[in-house]
Length: 434
Image (cartoon, rainbow, N blue to C red; front, side):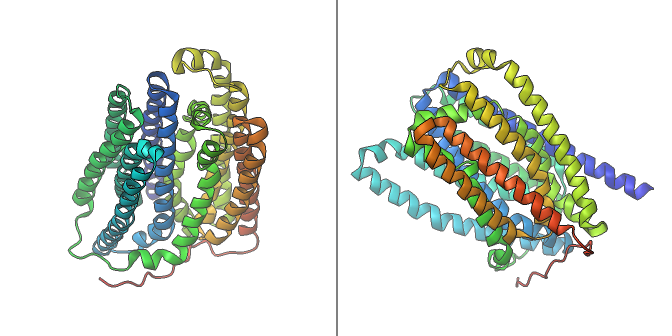
């Protein structure tokens, strides 16, 4: 009985630290949004939302390409081999970031000379580019700490990131170009927190005398499908901001993002627990059948969905005070936006835990196809509805995409549990050289 108790205790510690860490990050992002809404122009907040949306895309691509295929390999290797694999993964990511970011920055500088609009947007775009690159560095070391199950150094780095981000944005709100200052605050927070994460990894796991070559290429068979799914999901989960900016204006982006902002604590339930569920689900599948694992994940999804509903109900009762006193903003069609966002985030929060059975079983191609169908449904609805209904049409499109995704995940999960299947997760060896 000692071993199971120890395993349960470790799981609770891992999930607890993930929730606390996500609480810090969600709280920091919430404070950042409130500061920009209260003390900066709506246009500046809208620009910051577009920058942060692009950073979320980069983070999603990184996590999707590297996370599912790499997390199981790390569990199978010796410490020296794990360190070599991790070092090789970051070296190749760093080279890829430089190869893409430097030419892009040069093109932006050239375009700013030919267009007054581009010249206005150049500072915030370059700041966002720097923030994106450093956020990828932070994401790499965060992933390694999660994969090695070192929750407390991860939590310390997240706390530092949250503190620096809030302090930097508070200062940026005093500037005319608050969006540029806020993007630079993201960059600084990502740099210093990733340094703390890197030092913790060296202390706990050691260093690699040699780095493994060809890591990204070896991960491509599964990673490309996973990354494609993440990119497609981003198009209706976050990319709608760019559609709204094109179809309406940046002010509409601010209204949609400002309304979604008050629902951000729901991320504490879904993203916080979900970030720790992939390695845990992989362990469960080595010991139990997919049906039993799906039942566990379904229970977690039900609890998360109920808690999200309770929070949203409380928020609805306090909405007048929240907008008038806290945000100091009054958006058009506010209640409609809030109701639609409530439905969308509750559906997403209940769906996310169920995804990890399919991810751990490496059903990435099916997930990518499902995400593509969901994205097409969402984007089609957004393009059709926004010209007639304005900002609420965009959120309605997101809700349609989330509902389509939930229905597909339930169907795929049911198919995964049919018949007799081996409980262990089959993983092909990673063939690379050092």
